[in-house]
Amino acid sequence: MTAPLAQSLNMPATPLREHGEAGLAAGWALLHEAGQTIAELAQLGSEPMVMAPGEFALRAAAGGPVRLFLAEQGIDDCAAALHSGLTALIAGAAQGRDGTAAALTLWREFDRAREALVALASPPN
Image (cartoon, rainbow, N blue to C red; front, side, top):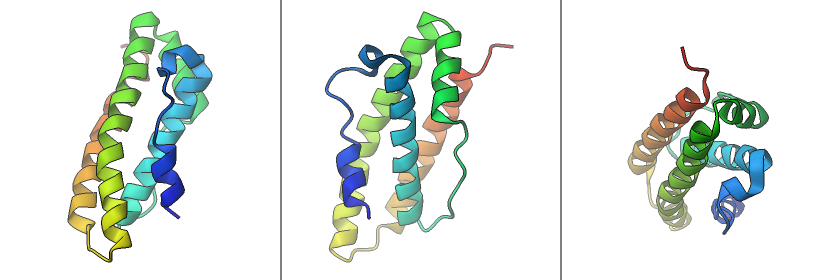
């Protein structure tokens, strides 16, 4: 169930910007997959994806090169932060430990990062 996800959170060795919009969309999808797993470990209900991966990539690209770069960097940073926490949660769950509180804390961090990335990809007012 969650073991393949822990492996999938190992983002590509090359930065997302070298993969273009497809890489950005894939990174966004992986973050949401990680968020769903964290929500499951935190015993929260499932949430719909806030913004489809392709739409996120298109909006970030439409915002210009600076916003695109910041979106790519934000996904890379978020994936790095989630990786160690999610790995620890999965390892603890495999040993029968209750990681609900830790998972809830990690989910809140994911949720804040996701909100910031959505705001970044949204058209400026």
